[in-house]
Length: 250
Length: 278
Image 1 (cartoon, each protein chain N blue to C red):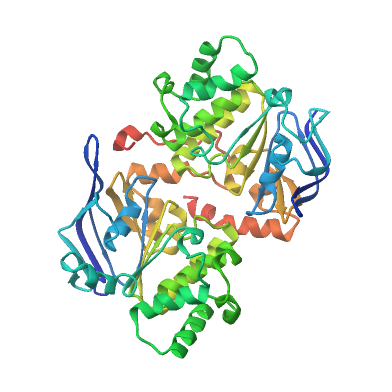
Image 2 (cartoon, each protein chain N blue to C red):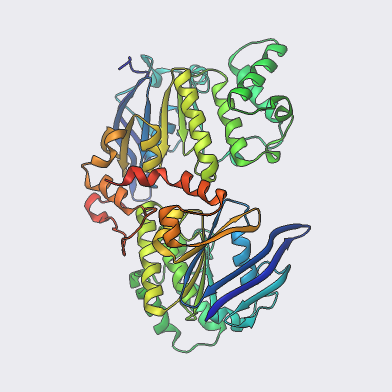
């Protein structure tokens, strides 16, 4: 089944067209990556799916249902987003407890108290963090809170916008392991934006390489690992990311 | 190896906190010759503070102490603020992480670079302009005349960082401290900027102190690598032998990075309790 279906998608910011003619299908249960340089339009696609970039034409379908141009409540129960910067995405004056209970409250879910405790446990945070404020947590802990909040409504689809690029490598490893485990346990579908090709190799099944608002090439992870891309741009991106890897092999 | 440009012994940077003073840099010693030394560590390891302390950029309530902090044999700690200004920028200069925040938004690129030169040298206006154009050319900006008239918002991130480098190198310093010079840039531009720094440092016989969180990047562009954690030097090794690192912290950092050909199901994570880091 298709979880996300994008057809002839154009997204505009005022006069400028940030994304043009994107066609993409992500299967249910798949982990799919959008990669590219800054300004290539990869984050904009996530925003349009979420309803945060409302000026678009074309088709966006999530699990067979057409998306509206704004945010809507039923959709947020189905699909959630995790943002890049865990320092900016949590309300500084709300405790972790309040941040996690808020989506439950909005959607009128029962047993909020119990759910918050479960959510913390699920992302590997100790219960003592529950009544702390974001500034009392490290970047990695905050990103765990952001993931817990995204999971609160038990969505089937997670949109991940550079979830680890603001974190140290050792913390990145922890968060990537967490995301991988959650996907396995809950059968989630991921659409992830990143500029880091090795992260894609670890996390994803397929990827699309973007440039100047268009998809240059769609490939599976085996292609990424061998670097045998069809397009010159994707090969360039691979070559520039690759030296790290050859040196790393003991 | 050449005579050291910079000698640091037992450098400590202390900040007061509600629960008592904390040493963010705790007894770091290093020497830098005409070579490229990398300082790597995670956030909070004290790597940036080390670079800043050398330039005397730690403001109160932070305190810097060192048994020795000498540039070409001159003890920096004994200099007045005025004498220090003659060294900072002119003899030792620093490239910061993000050109968006380090360039003056209301001044053209040409004027900013010229200012860096005029502050340290007294030259006729025509010579200043020629030096600026020549410098922009050496950071591979092909049309210096046009770029000199642009404002920072009119240039890309990669070009902004090249302009920063031009500004830092125009007084012909002996040491360049580069603090995460490419973290804000795309991979395609990162390589160009680092190659450029590398060429300029080699051609001018300078010392480079490259501060970064990226072990592989530092391994590629430096001769020696110093690994820091929680304010202390964990180990110093030849960049060539980075993979033969002995300390479990360095090994842990290396292993935690995903590889292009990744087949591990789970990435190894650091057991932080071992080094008492946060």
